[in-house]
Image: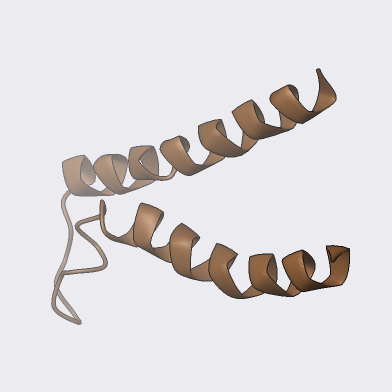
Length: 64
């Protein structure tokens, strides 16, 4: 049973992570060669925070 969930997690985690991070960024939708402003770069960096916060919450709940 554990091996089945491990394989499922290995398959789903990159899809979920990519959707969670890349769908919220401007850089992933910009045309190649387009220069992004500092505001867009800062927004892209902040878009990754949600994924890390969710991982931290899950780990805290598991440790509790």
